[in-house]
Length: 371
Ligand SMILES: Cc1cc2nc3c(=O)[nH]c(=O)nc-3n(C[C@H](O)[C@H](O)[C@H](O)COP(=O)(O)O)c2cc1C
Image 1 (cartoon, protein in one colour):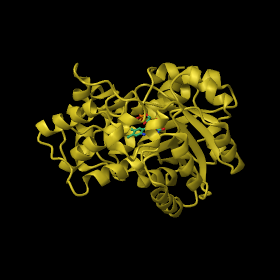
Image 2 (spheres, helix red, strand yellow; image 1 turned 90 degrees about the vertical axis):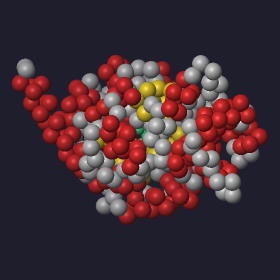
Image 3 (cartoon, protein in one colour; image 1 turned 180 degrees about the vertical axis):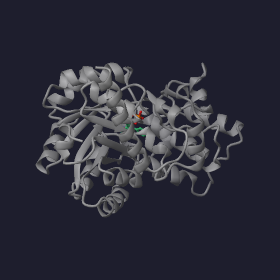
């Protein structure tokens, strides 16, 4: 296939695969699309290890990295993140702790529980300072040809540093106003993410958002369609609306390559689209996740208000670790989009892409036969 985005990166397919799992990223790149590693949860050392592995498993083809650089956040809390006991309000900590105790979900072991929580918090990288360190690591890997920033306007010095290394810069956006700011900041392409997407999402649906962003971006800035794409029919719709390719996140969670736990995969394959809902309970910002007793808890009328970014994400580390360790499915929540209702069984990344291409060809035939 040939679009403005395949030309920009010299790849065969306008299909981008976002994942935190290196096996998915490598498989998307090897299949002819472009894998993009979500690097925000890694330490610098761990990221270096993952990127070295990717360099060896991507057949010399390009891949990308995605980091979070929030424009607005509580700097005081971020700087004190390792003194977690002092900065998190006891009301919030106790609210979740008591609910999990009542549900019989064991606490973390006394000897290393706190250290494990701090270690995880250390690796929540949501701010320009945190992400800058990771980007320096990424710069050591020449097959990284794309940097995508989520959560905020990409700082100019970051755009310039990427361009100096031949790395194209993109930004995740959910509203027209955000697109204008990212274009002014020097982005080379945009990822327009509709509300149906998994993870942090805005309020506007893909069907409305994609063409709006295409119009704002104009002919020189390609737009990728994100949010609700898991099949060739959806890919055909995305290209028909003027985008240059698709950016998928949720669909890979159910792949063989995905490191999602068996419990999570089981819940994903049983979920309906309406089970993927927006909540502020997991990170403090609107985030679409698989509903569970955890999201119900934060929706209760007596629940405390979510903490400002990034404190709420820190707060939720311990409860999420408790749920994961206990393998409790009812309390398990994970970012996923409304496409989850179409995810029914495990298949390889290559099969998913193959089916997308067949579905795309069939959709185009159907559309063309109507003329
Ligand atoms: C589990 C999960 C985690 C995500 N984390 C991030 C992230 O760290 N950075 C980011 O830019 N987007 C993140 N996203 C959003 C994806 O990049 C993508 O835009 C979205 O998944 C597309 O919509 P879809 O879920 O319908 O495929 C995440 C999505 C999922 C499902």
